[in-house]
Image (cartoon, rainbow, N blue to C red; front, side, top):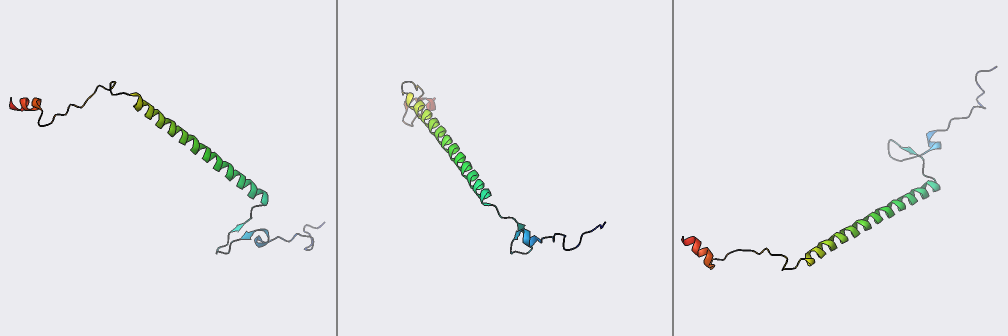
Length: 103
């Protein structure tokens, strides 16, 4: 019984260069490129996320528009007869302001 196999039967180890692609920069970074399926899944996921963001933007825009319309309708519903507050600013020519200043 032999504890180790003959060199011809042993699988030679593949180097990193054979297993992976690497960057040209120093030090090199080893990586596996994406498969076509992974690329397609990633693109679909990105498209779905973009559609979701666009849907949310549209909902927010509609909410802002509704809020503006509510504010407009409130301001339109108020008539001048309902709004009894009036400014009581007095000008220099006002007789009431003169009488108070002389006394």
